[in-house]
Image 1 (cartoon, rainbow, N blue to C red):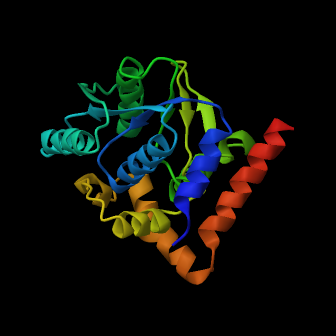
Image 2: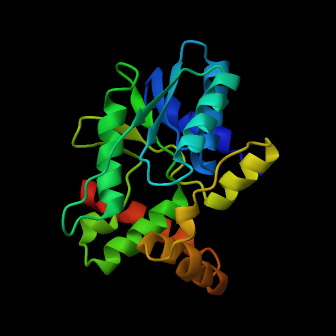
Length: 229
């Protein structure tokens, strides 16, 4: 199994933060992220850690997911805070975008002071974002997709230490450490472009072309590098 923890640790320690707030949805990506952050905290006692969960109320299981996250943090002795938000869509707004903005707004007031926000976006998310932006006709800046570190419109420093790690490696890590997690039923709904790409298009491309997703990831990094230059 790929040493995800070493990658995670190296990515974070070089940034110099000592306080981390983890965005915890309860899905496998965020549970693995929290487990890695806990290992870092256990290794370096000066590091402060907190988990935050945002309940969008979009699923009938939303309350169960919140309870799962709270119980997980209690069992791992990690400070936890949950927020509930209501989503109001205007014409031509996407649910994904509105939910993201509401989530960050709620998280902003729950974070540890002077901390960065850790989110569990990974390599497969990067590839999906590249194709979504390609479909929309994005230029080079947009096709660079997700950055490892960014500051959003609300002034939150967002760090994505798993961005170079595949979903497959994350799932193997969860299995190896017997980490329980929730499954969001909306991930099977192909009316969302990201789900359609994830469930149908990208599996075929990776089956046809070996290492396809990792190659696309390298392209996004090259585009970001060119933009910086």
